[in-house]
Amino acid sequence: KQILIINGPNLNLLGKREPTIYGSQTFEEYFQTLQTLFSDVELHYFQSNHEGALIDKIHEVGFTFDGIVLNAGAYTHTSVAIADALSAVTTPAVEVHISNVHAREAFRHHSYLSSRVKGVIVGLGLKGYELAVRYFV
Ligand code: DQA
Image 1 (cartoon, rainbow, N blue to C red):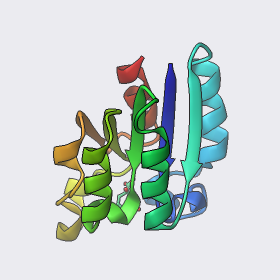
Image 2: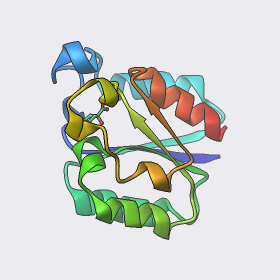
Image 3: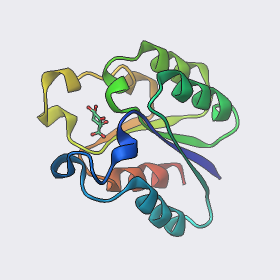
Image 4: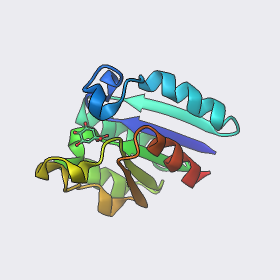
């Protein structure tokens, strides 16, 4: 199986970004754990701070891969364009948020993406990515 994890803006700073909210592990380190855990899966990782780059990546894998695990960061709450990209492709996606967005500011409560994905995992820390990959496996 081919599965892509996509992280959006500011998630390249995981480990040093607001560690009380997002934890102190870098995603690169966690990704290695995931690859060990799912050694029978072709697991890929892509991160960008740019909305268009995230859309290009969804298009690139969205007709051939088996699943997309997407944490679009703050674009979750703003991007009709990423929502449209998810609708345009055939590969199903699962939306992940490390923090419990519903326990935070009101502007984080709405997601443009949630109606375009199979399901949403919020608030379970980095573990959410593992659970999302497990869903596709
Ligand atoms: C986030 C939640 C978003 O509201 C925020 O903008 C992020 C990270 C999360 O993983 O908890 O960048 O997607």
